[in-house]
Image (tube, rainbow, N blue to C red; front, top):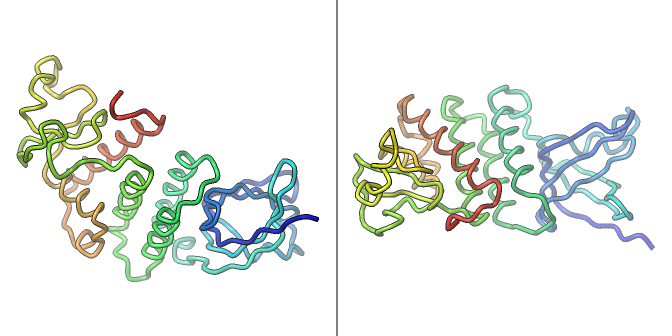
Length: 254
């Protein structure tokens, strides 16, 4: 007898297969990541069409075959219409989907990550969201996802001497996984042409403040911050560099 499974799922990727089929990558509250095959879903007569799509939250049912999981039923919970209808919101949603696709490979329940996704997409879909600040939601997701996946950075003190950091001389070390004071960075700086330790980037106090607030999940304060273009660009560089460093799964101690 075939066993049917039911769960709540967030759809973060889809791919057309054959002439009328489709494959969905979803993150569920019961199983973590699943890759689900939906047979003939692209046909107009398919009863599954209205219940599942990219960036939907849906109740799904599926059966496990020898090689794949096949979708048998889907009922939409939330379509997040504002995300699908707005270019900037949709772009952010796609970047979040890429993070999930790159970091989550196997099936493992993660209630914290599922709740973070639910929180982020509700905020991203909110019609009152200041679109000029919407880019911060991506970083809010990214750094909190890092934390949940075991890559939480140290941004309260120096990651070497554990002392206070000087707001005018701060480095972020990807290798060590956090902030490093000017004194501890000194020995490495002399060996580097630009005076920046290997595997590090000079940052400012704005970046430290933003990442601290993100990890505290203080969106109300973050959404009111006035961020200079230079700090916005630096936040992007630090986030992208850290993303690239931890993606292969290397340890900070290596």
